[in-house]
Image (cartoon, rainbow, N blue to C red; front, side, top):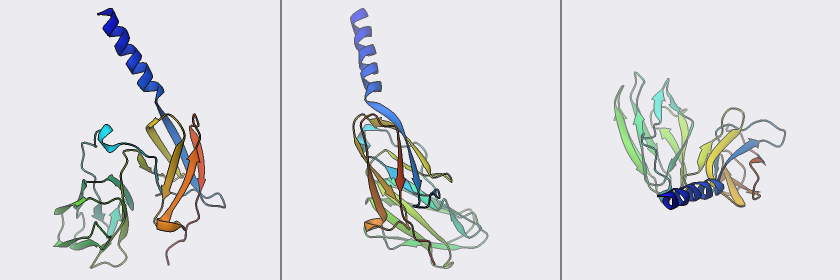
Length: 197
């Protein structure tokens, strides 16, 4: 019994040693914080349970909320309509194309997203409605808050490549990458973004 307890303790301690929490701060070249950027590091999806609650992108006040949503490959997203008007939600994203024809208040529709990448979301009735879903192939992905901060937990020990995606980031596929050294728990990433017209 003592040997089993010692082994379990050693396993728990070694597991703790191989995971860490990191903070990534994203800002523009002039120091302004960048909200709604998706910060991610590589990881095995099968090693971390998927969230129990289905991710949601609601329509309220003729806007999508949230503006940027991050989900895992294969996740289903619910699109509830909280407006008094009907919406026709769609995306032409390669591999994640869908169309939810007109539906009204307190109705909802569900879409599964299978392919990693950025998915612009629009409404065929209200042209000013725009949002983005970032589909990722890692369990370690977080959207930055208003201060440009993302906190990731349970990151494997060792050097990591950090990826930052923003729908308006200048760069191939709206991506910027940075390297985080072994043992480093805080990183600043500078991205140049272009505001939409």
